[in-house]
Image (cartoon, rainbow, N blue to C red):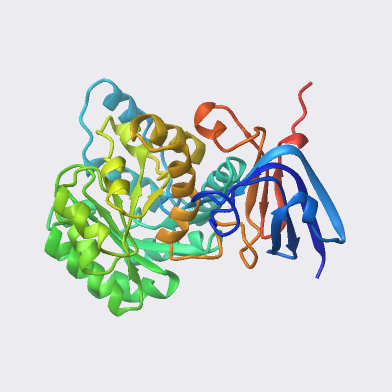
Length: 397
């Protein structure tokens, strides 16, 4: 195996308290060693072992790559006019999804793949190295299969979200569509996915319909996730905990019972502040969740209607300012928290045995991600031990 020493690190975020200070496991004047695609050593630069090669970050902070545990990147079409209408005062409802379904069904497979590749490239440049992607804009057997095939050709974390909303051809007959999803779509599509998801919300699917979808997925080997409590107080959180879901996402409208249920479970609460920003929804009560001991993740929720961003740094800045998270909490939630939401222990951390996914910032520490909102601070990104992006290659004439 070829070994490479990464040095010149002013601050290393390991997310392992056994390696450094605090929950982020911070090490000052640090170094780490990569062997092929894996981290083999982490510690003070002065104690670094000999290696085959060396890379100097020249006084930059280094963090684990962001782990995006909630995205909808297989789609076609544009909903900028819908966004403008919301900014002018129109209230958000789930209905706009149907427009994306129409455009996605009409697009070619190559168009869908090209668009997702573009968004993944954006994500990488802002430090994201692991991306979960959902289907949900096809909503027929063939369209959902195609969406999952496109997603699976570009990322490893694939979620079947056939139950996003009821497609227009069902004329509002939600129960009939749930039957089709459970009896036709899920059995055909499950082999291409790892996760099963449902939008448990007014205007989408109620508690019992959501339970049927999730259990059908579980019967075919999929692990549940839930879109819950985004627009209204509802059953999504409790359903997620009941079924042992890996995560319940959005969790804006929750009560003390919901918080207690999450705190007593292994279900991660994934907060998606980009969606709340873009819909003028209220923000989730991150402080109450964290203080109660709930595991919290942050996601960008890239989708064409309600959060058309791939920038985790943008979401970190919102989380610190408007969700009242500390910078440490927001960075942990967007790395190790996202990994927890995907039930992964090989990403979101920088410790021996973990995958060598990391980023360097043009900044001395992680605080700058919130301190300098809107600034492209990511200097380079490494994925599985390979340099995948370097800002130094961009020439300024």
